[in-house]
Image (cartoon, rainbow, N blue to C red; front, side, top):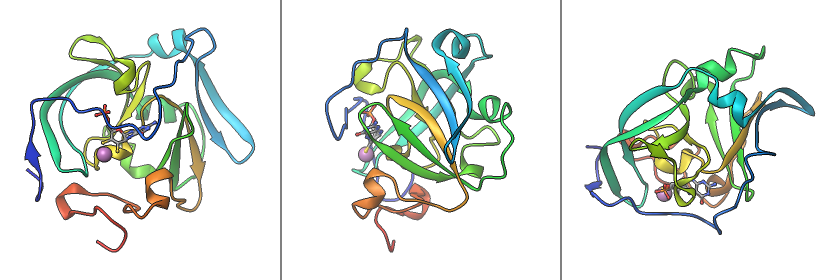
Length: 181
Ligand SMILES: Nc1nc2c(c(=O)[nH]1)N[C@H]1C(S)=C(S)[C@@H](COP(=O)(O)O)O[C@H]1N2
Ligand SMILES: [Mo]
């Protein structure tokens, strides 16, 4: 367990705003760079990609951790393999306006997923359905719910919570909760 965390068997819901309602008919997941959309997938196109079952521990900065959570989703590697970019950072963007930033190496090499299933069921809207990022090695605020794409960046830019003083990287094992930790 990372320092300062306790285990819960609940699945708390933490959202900075209301749960958006997405229509799957118009839903897309896009990878953008500057003013260009490098690649965009519709819902059926995402569901046609190879999916993985992932069992991981998740760690919220509010100190709850949940062990052995089971997800289904597409590896972000599979998505990024379809674009050509030398970007160093990503900013995930979402329905509702939430954003969060990460180095690109933290969403590659099998460390991040676009998750649309939880416990064998479609991901519930309050937990980010139809699809959310799953980046379990960082605090859970990096796992953007209702995610609609990744913006590729040359330089790191703070997302929503990072602008309010949360850590730019957010490694639970180093207790990087707030800027300066
Ligand atoms: N779009 C969006 N994603 C978000 C959030 C949010 O408010 N909006 N909250 C973050 C935080 S702080 C946490 S701890 C997790 C909570 O996910 P859960 O509600 O499924 O437990 O989602 C993260 N992703
Ligand atoms: Mo959180």
